[in-house]
Every structure is written in C-alpha cells, then in structure tokens.
Image (tube, rainbow, N blue to C red; front, top):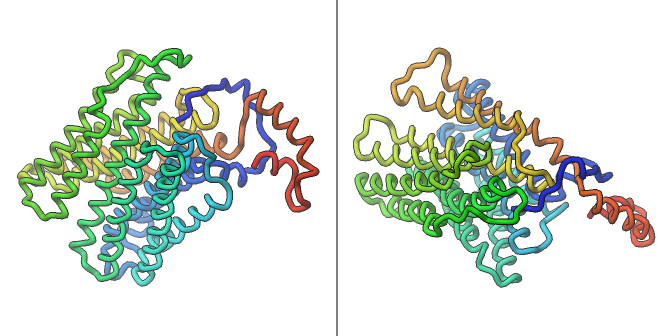
Length: 432
C-alpha cells in the first residue's frame, strides 16, 4: 500500500479520459464495479423481485444470492485489490488497459447469469468465474517467480482455495445437488475470510503507522507476528473439518476458535486516541464482526438459541462487507496520492453498512423492528456503497499527479509525437 503522501493542493489533473483513468490500475475499475454490484443486487432481489430470480428453477434463489454477493461483489473487490497491491509489493508495473478490461469482461459474464439466476447457463458462468480466478492465480505465481519472492504466496494459496470452492459450488449447481451447493457456498465465504485475515495483516500495520506518524519518519506500531496469519490458519482448519464431515460439536468449537483469532486482531486498534479514526475503526470493526459471526455460528452448532445463518450473515455481510469497504476507503486515498482522512460521505456510508448488518440480524435475536427489516437492511447496505462511490468516484475517474510529475509529463509530451502513430494521441501515449 502506498505510503508516499501528497497534499491535495499539489495535485493536478492529467488530460486523460475517464475510461483510460479507470483502466490505469485495477482498483480504479474494480472497486466501483464491486460497489455498484454490491449495492444493486440485494435491492433487486429483496424489493424488486421479492426474494425470487426470474430464471432460477433448480437452484434456490437464496443460494444464488449468497454466491453472487461473495463471488460477484467481493470477487470484484479481490481483483481490484490483487492487481493493485501485488505489483506494488513486487515493484512491478501493474496491469493496465486491455488486460483489466478482459478480467472485467470475464467477471461480467458470470454476473449477468447470476443476476438472473440463470440455471440453464450456469456452466458458462462457471467457466467465466474460474477463468478470472485462474488468471489471478497465474498472475500472482508469475510475479512470485519473476521477482523471486514469497510475499504473494499466501494470497495465491487462498485464491486457489477460493477457486476450488467456487468450482465445487458451480458443479453442485449444475448437477442440482443443493446440499453440496450450500456447503460449497459457505466454504467460499470462509475462503474470503481467509483472504481477509491475511489482507488485514498486510494493511493494518502501514495504515496504523501512518495514523500515528503521518511523516513516516518512524514506525511506532509493531504488532505481534503471531497475529499475522493465526485467524486465516484457523479458518483453514475449520474448512478442512467441514469438508471432512466432522461432527457439529467439533466444527462448532473450531468456528469459535477461528472467531476468537479474529477478535484478537481487534487488539491492534488499541493505540490511544487515534483509535477513533475512521480508518482504524473500519479495519478493527471488520475483524470484530468476522470474529463475532464465527463465534455465533459455532455456538449455534453447540445448541445456542439462534440460527447458524445469523452468525454467517454477521461474518460474511458484516466482517467481509466492512473489511472490503475499509480497503476501498484506504486504498482510494493512498493510491490516488491523497493523505489519510476518510471523506464525510464515506464515513456515513460505513455507519449505514453497520446499520444494515444490525437490521438483518435483529429478528434472529428476537428484536422485532417496525417495517420490512429485509428491505430496510438492503437499502442501508446499498446506500453505504453508493455513498462510497459518490465520495471516491471523482478520485478514481481522473489521474492526478504532483506538480513535479506533471512537469515531467509535459516534457515527455514534447518528445512523443515522433514516436506515436496516427491512431494514438501524444497525450494518451505519454500517460500509458
């Protein structure tokens, strides 16, 4: 994650269209796609379609819903994160232009099918989803090999696990094995929690140090190394027990252990007054909700008076949702050359996201709220991501450089005409 900061007053627009700006780095294209899909899908499913899908005849719409929120919305966030963070961690050029649009096209094919619950075209959606997951995995392995580093192998491993779970879910959809499909979709959620665990380990440290010392002269925050991978490791153990078909008691205790490991990550936010900064609260809140959800799910398997689904909603909707939202907010600032300081609209969006989780879980714990709680929860969730898009859209659709970089760009523009063809403008060539 970028830590070199620039004040807004030193930033200038580069003359490049918004389409080229979106394809300049992965986060510029895929974070908005993820936000739009995350906002639109629940509202359509709950309010417009009444918990039904027009072409879902064999697979329950609820399974399509869970699959699309995980593989669809959070999958786009994963593509944006990996294609932005991996090249920075390996000091390589990021994917740009056609390569990003190709990934977006593959992702989009699966989303059209998922949005309709199109059982008959499920195999096509499966091929598209597994294609972009495979390309993402190959990209990480290639960078690891070329740069001779193991920094990306943890992410590569979890993406491979995610791809395996996604393949299992799609096969179950095609053969109409609803029990296997349900297990596979839950495993997809757990795989994303594994990715969340290692992502928070990479993100929390530099963000906390920037909050404590914006000059970057010191690194006052140094967490215990045991926290880096503990939560993800215990999630993997839990997934293994699920696949092995161990008893509800065993898997219940393992879920509680994995949840406790996520709760332990919350202690990283105990940094005094700066802990109230939005960046810290969102990252810590993601761990807290993921941990709470896993503990609730484990307790349900041990006989607690609530459903396991309530815990999974807290972990997936709350933990993953707030984690993704927090990454959107932090990366959207640092990767566009801005200092930390989440815009007011985005802070309001985080509150809406948390409110949507509370609204969704309230009936499961005997709290009866007036009005259609599913509809209110979906609207609050959609509002959260739309507020983020309103706050960060202007940052993502234009490229801004420091005055020094703009000067260098203008110098380069003078040399470009002789090197560019008639179909490409000098300014575009300089930017690309």
